[in-house]
Image (tube, rainbow, N blue to C red; front, side):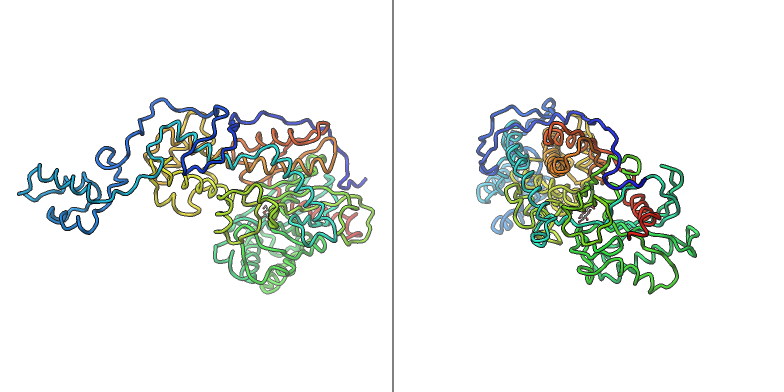
Length: 587
Ligand code: BGC
């Protein structure tokens, strides 16, 4: 018997584990961090404590005392004349002046006088405002600044409501055009039933890399897969659509030749992980680019046709495009292949998005003939939430800055608060603000730290993977950033910033998932998950389990299942399901 999306369910238990020990219970401080007013003491923060062995950072951090050179800038014009009598010394600090002093007739006493005069005459570069604050004060200020990144229960409740509202607007024919969360129909109405067999090609475009795969579905749950990753150079990501699709077709042809299937006409599933208004399983019009792509001439076009045209321009390979799908769909399908209880697909990687199983009568945009199937996979494209101001009550100065400097300002605002493309940069912006205020690294920055995009998202995972009180990874990261003089307290504060940013992302995603779970109202369900942030962040999974459990109806249980290569195998499965004999008739 055919299983549709409402197919057999297996009973699953909640894979519950407690969250991390980070406590964010501090009251919501309202004072500006830079003003130095500390109003936020309601609870003692739990913190990965490292206060032993800390060097005293009370000194004012300038001149000879600390040799940091932070405030010993070149003398101004007037003093240069006098300094000139010391020869060619570069005035990088008083210590330098002293060591390069060679003017024989100047006595030590004269030198001292000159130094005093210099200090009196020159305006000193002011120290960053909080460079002299105590360790405890600095810690409080870090917590206070990060307070805006911590979501209150009330905010989460409000977000739940808004997500649900937008999903409903996306599904509704009359409000769809204006909705943030588009809820695109995927035309996928069947889960794999285990009988899918054969050889399939898959293309996976959606991040910085592009993959071609050859998948052989064999016995139930047995498959063989070969794949190759091809880089998408930056100039192609923002070039013309024709260049992009020619590049894809070229990679496909070279892969087929390497794998000796050049002459075969194989069915192909195309995972295209961008917002697509689907008009059928093999027709999809691009709504907008996301994740750093911006190829001209593609928005508003059917990307399947663009791929077919590029293949035809080459004229050397033959393929049959059986399906175009989102990576969330692929993720759901690949998990559902093993677990029929899987009804939600989630990606937390370069971008973020979720798809879920919806009742057909709710899918007002579905214009296909009534085929007797009761359910449809919906690609929410939740990354766009906030495009109409819905997230303004949560967004911070850092989110604004990320958005202003992005390739698509004003768009994908939910995604920009969550996904791997932005997480590292968010942390960097908070750190830079703390450095400028003198709270971190005695106010000393580095060129790398000050460069956009140079705090990679993988650093967040690495830093948080350190055991509490240990800063091995954190120091390695700071070294890479050219920040070699960090104290343990600096490291603890950097870690705290990472925790706040990643925890917020996990809570936002959880809020979205809980909204879907409550809407679907199934007693047990599995969420198939993929994406680098979910995969590699040491606490993302447990943070999500904890938060979702808190937010869903008490009689529902769920678990999160890591998808094994949803974009690849999922694409083959969608193609396979589409090719299944029972579906050919209804296509
Ligand atoms: C895209 C989605 C995709 C998600 C995860 C977003 O930027 O719009 O289609 O599913 O990234 O890759």
